[in-house]
Length: 236
Image (cartoon, rainbow, N blue to C red; front, side):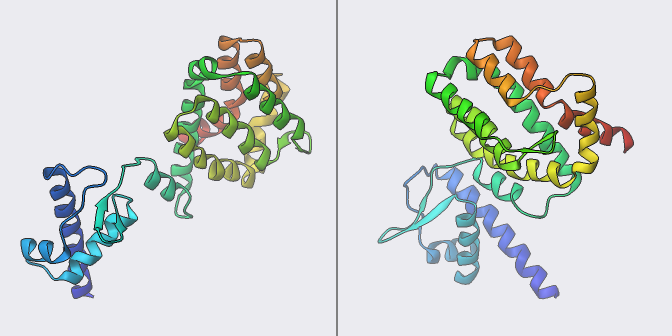
């Protein structure tokens, strides 16, 4: 066990050194890395240790293998590993609630970008999604329909990082629906107060070019999520 921990520590240390080497050598996308034997001699470690550390960098999408060239630097995508973690089953309730809060902040914040980019075809597709929505009871839209609608909103902005971030919607919507007996209290409260804003309402704001109305509407549309998070924070 002690030897295993020591080995893990060595791999961690070498991974850090390799990242430092890439930075100091100013290697860019498409540049080749030196051979395993080069790093083995440079850092006085075994080639197996080098191979394991390089494998970690591949998993992080920092490098990739290419025929006849060995390991080369990949174009950095800051969202890839973030999404990988989010989609795992290791996220606890607090982390999921933090992501819900992040999602709400982003969807409200991108309002000006939506109105600068939206066109007639975007509106037609949003209307088609709303028409296809399958109501579950009198308060829920299906997880699939929620994801389709909000993903299409993200696509209007045409930002690659936001498009990657749409994967965050899957666990967030699944979480809300799997905890619906608890979450429904917040939805019902808004419904009783007449403050529910539907997908159809949001599409109407976009069609009318009403940016301020949409911003207020999306905040109210997400209000149940925010109230759910705030109440949890109060209880802590």
